[in-house]
Image 1 (cartoon, one colour):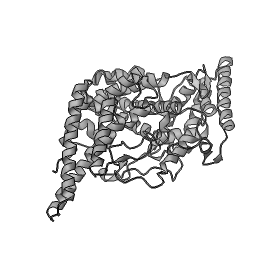
Image 2 (image 1 turned 120 degrees about the vertical axis):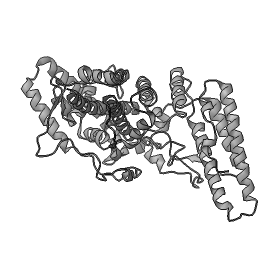
Image 3 (image 1 turned 90 degrees about the horizontal axis):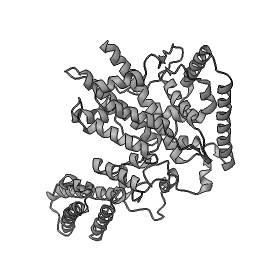
Length: 490
């Protein structure tokens, strides 16, 4: 009875055909109940020394099946699968075997679960998106459930990720997953072709940016994975500290942050002040235009100032798995692009940009993927609902451009036609700290940082900010890598 999760065929549950799903569910039910009956019978018979390890392995295998069923009962877009999975779990519990329960309260530690679209949504577009994602992965991951705040972007993201990982390309599948897991390339005996190198670079930048989104939005561990469930019974009070960290508390408590009490009126005036600055900047644009020398000077000032924006050490940081054993260089980690006292080079977009250079290079060496990435960049950059907090019919293009260009500025990338003086007007210190932390050291992001900027804005708007951050980061990394490849080719 050493079989585990791999004994069960889960792929039938991804079918759009209800009969196929019903057959798969019945097979899963029989397997789970058979293993449950075996373990139940073991409890009732004297234990021989030789049986100990075998029974432990059997219990571990059953627990993995139960954790997977728990995930399906919460995260499957098909109602029949959710209900039958829950029924199987209850049947196991009635036979005297402890079943798992979720840890935490939803896909994000930062966003209350009640504000995230439910898996069982009857909205046709949402159900189609969820069903497509479930068919591709066999589950609905927490990243998808948070990204669905912006379905147009999510659709583009899923399409690009599927192409990178599953469709024909220069790199074999196991290389792609290794690169995705490790986030680095290890020297091999053979040399890489340019097509393989471009594929690897795109994968690296994709997963770097995905890490930023995961930490920036406080994505929780998947239900069926370590940290996503527990077999321990709930405490007597049924109270969990994660109620506080996940935002499932009263309105009064939500007004408190690390600096003390924050009233609704204070947050309201922050929004009003930001909108007034946008109006004034637009008027200044219309009245006079800064000289090229002045704009170059403002860029250098902003670039230098970005050196002094640090992510604060925060006790709230969620412990991450120790992956240092995978690195030959244990000091591996983020190093600031800028160094105090050193000349910081400038990457001029007018000399090498994504639209005119990077896009064509990627498409030439890795056909079609350039178009997918370009579509994703454009959706993230241009995405707007013309709202800001409680205000409607607002042109947010100035604010979106400031966020995008600030990220590129941190990497020394300059747009000659942009006035970098706007950044300090539109992005306050706490927002800059959040941006730099998400982009450069995402593992240090905390709920306190997430809560401290744009306090009156909706969670969907903060997720939108994260989409801008990850796509701007990905484009910045691609620009440097593709320019180096272009220089090598010429």
